[in-house]
Length: 350
Image (cartoon, rainbow, N blue to C red; front, side):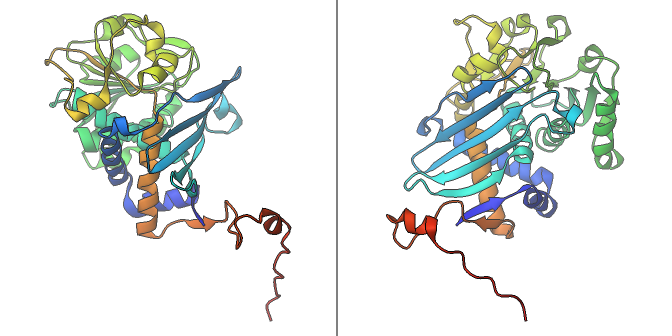
């Protein structure tokens, strides 16, 4: 039997365990796997592009677990009442190929993206950072805000979106934190206004275009830039000159070259693997005035970490169900008998 976690189950996990604790514990799981980076068989995601979006498969494995995620990115979807990003994934036993977990990954991807962002920021931002600009106030924004508030120490959020209704939504969803006095939200009229004086700048926009959300003249000494927005070939958020003057960190460079801000840079442009900074074999930020940049595109290893975390948490809390995703046969070589077996007769209740 394969454990099954649907959207309602994930909502139950969030209600029972809490959003912030889940992102903190997920960040720990991701860090554990990043510290074993060289144990994993890695490859860039496989993508099929259309005029309006992209559908991707993201596989990764070590000698014990295999995982993949199916995920899309369709910026026009909200006009049809659909999410821009939707996903599901599988966690399997490498020794047998048996699928151990089938899970929703739309909510989980938001959790793991914010968890990864916070994990990277703790390694690359100035330790005293308390103010973050959040450019793009859509589906990912609240998760980023809560992760940075609870894990990094952000106390002031300077927010902007070209759609004022998105900012209205963000402010309403974060009201418990502002009412409690743990977070101050400043609504800004432009990106330029939002980033002024910020320690950290997070960009989470979704349009499938080569945009310039941040220009080089907006960047101040010592800033940490968390470029998270939905990535795909032909989609960027930052002025290329920003990368030329920052120390740039990546998850998996072959993928970042295809989908990240690195699309704009020459093949010889130097980047630094985040996993080496976490492992202590490479230097992160070198001094307080240095501008550091995490060109984050989301990597399959983060999904494997998230899936194994969700699997363990769901078992511990008794959330989820099991499904017959693959046949369970008395004779493993007799698939025909399994396929043609008569269904059991369901008796009517007396």
